[in-house]
Length: 639
Image 1 (tube, rainbow, N blue to C red):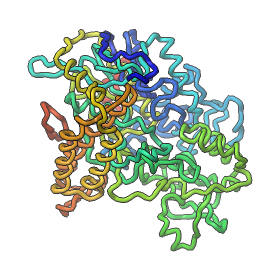
Image 2: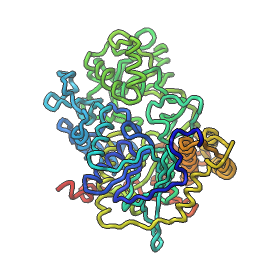
Image 3: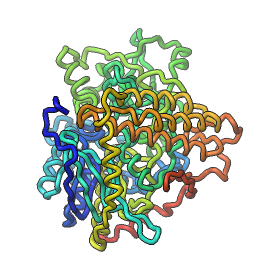
Image 4: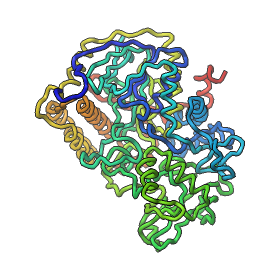
């Protein structure tokens, strides 16, 4: 590390104690730490990046979905949560959905209390049909049910950081969580903290905690990775790769739905870029007017197939339709208006429409045009600078110009069937109603949970997990650190620094992605999956010892790829465990003709214990009555 600009602290160690330890400083982790600190707990938050802009929503978000308790909403948390569960054919995290629907608006009010902007306080949209004149809240997508809000999401992380500092949370930035610490008593394992590494100096931290909250990202770079074209992610940052999943797996945490994968990678890949400069086209641009190369408008249709004749009609349910789902949480909402984004290119060409297609904001009412271009594109973190600011600087005028786009909901690139990704309510950690994992002392929230949604769910589950962890911390003591394990882990983590002229982390990431494309693609069978497992085992045996890093930053990237290897292996084993095909899980086997047999309509759980993968089974609606169980586990909140 002779050329490294920071102090070389390799080999140094600092021991820390706290009541609640939060791993991950995205919006879910920030809320978990805030909730724990507000309950008087000595709280530590560990974040790999810098808190002011870290995490998937770190640079901004444009909408806040499922805020059912806001004053203008016309549907109940129970109605909306059940709609999501039904839409996902019950392969759905009912606990997280209900927490989001029940508490999402409360967390938005918290953000306002911390100094973030959630209302049209300057009356920029006064008189618009999506504005509530009394509260100055702006609604999105469904202007009747009003459960999704347009927000100024670029103000959120700075506000959260201010609150963390105000509460005295101990913040360890540029510090990568690398391993969970556990102890075993009478055959039962319990989480007692974590091991972390300073990514500037390589100093190690051994952090004992009474309770630990996992608040890191979902996996990425599993099937797709191109080191020469990392691209600008249109959804999640390239460094959000699922290290929390890998740490949990190694510690014995249970996961479910890890066999689910949907086509297309929306984060951290060379093919994930703001398509044709429209940015996140899955919700930010809903429901922009679309035209073909001749300027002929491509119509929106309602649920019953009737053509909608006005822009405003795109945002309202039809007669007999209570509400419809929109806002980024669902892949193919059954309650949603059908617009240009739901028709295939082939279908549109058959109907006579000509490529290329364009988003035409100029023909929309001024308030809708301003809402999409000035507010939503301007507040969505992945579009604010590369799309909104750059195109404005270069003279783009939404009142005059068209913007080439292939739909407001189509994929940003053409993906092959073997190019899969954990997107669209993917697999993750399974918990109880306290958001506690199968291990005492370890909670999970945000993207660490299976079947997760977006920002509102992250904040709601983060706060929920943080306060439940805080309550549990009152009645437990610190565990005893296994020094042999710590020593072994530090040796494993430092190993690439000792290797000269070895393999770069990018090479292994590419190899893993290619293996997953070849052996865990769109079609699966036992032979392919077992070949994939054998190949990954060979990488672990032959390639991992050859990994080399020149400094702590490269070492951190190397650790990420080691975690990607762990998660890829878990996915292959999870796929082996599901013996039949499943449409709701986007899972298709070639060695069976069975689709969704009743006996296989269940959550298959996967846990790694003493180096062996173990299969478990949980019924789909294991969480029971949503309202009843939520209130039973949150009596203090409801008092």
